[in-house]
Image (cartoon, rainbow, N blue to C red; front, side, top):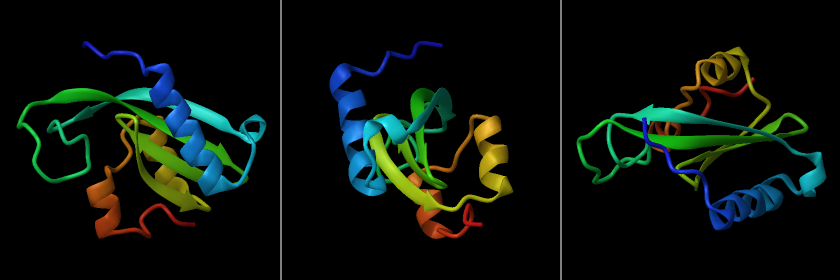
Length: 110
């Protein structure tokens, strides 16, 4: 598996977006990151992507029960108050992509 590390700019963009969404300073975050396998190069965002299996980082930033999810360095969605399914998917390193989350936005809500 080849997975390039997040660049300093990508990491800064992720933290900056989370700061705006969560309204907290960086000291209040818990950050989780893992490689996630996607069925296309769109990395769960839908649209036009190459039909090839590929890996990309998934980053979850948690703060006071709110989670911001990023795939491949891009903001995907925010969940306020997560349920058990979110925890199961996190433990399996396989969160929904943005397109699937947008179809069913309540899937991870408690």
